[in-house]
Image 1 (cartoon, one colour):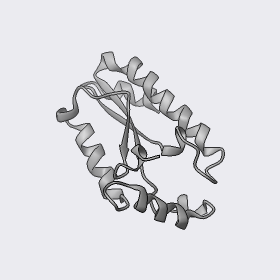
Image 2 (cartoon, helix red, strand yellow; image 1 turned 135 degrees about the horizontal axis):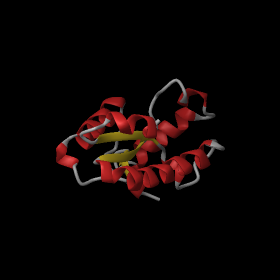
Image 3 (cartoon, rainbow, N blue to C red; image 1 turned 60 degrees about the horizontal axis):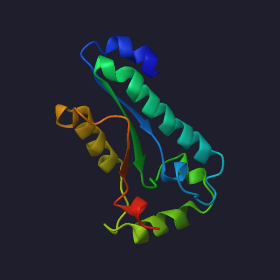
Image 4 (cartoon, helix red, strand yellow; image 1 turned 120 degrees about the horizontal axis):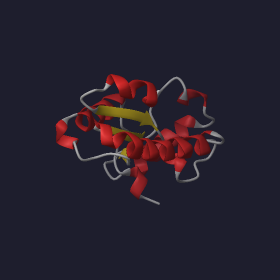
Length: 129
């Protein structure tokens, strides 16, 4: 998709992908999604390298667990939500607006020199073992 969108971004721009903590650490019941998210993060790094000369920045966003339709299919998802809230230094779950705010920032010129990384929007949960 990024390759198809790039020609339309004549003045540069930003591309986003949604990842998850399970790309880097084992999360019970996340199963085959973990290597898929790890591959997605690697693809973001390579796309950032390839599209950077065109002024296009690429970001992997890794939110904490969100109450979404897809997530509701995970076994023991309620336990995962409770654990994330207790583990996060900020002490609460993130919501879709938190993710939107981070993406809005990264899409602006305020973040014009940020590309290729994974941005965690999880209340700091990713820093705690």
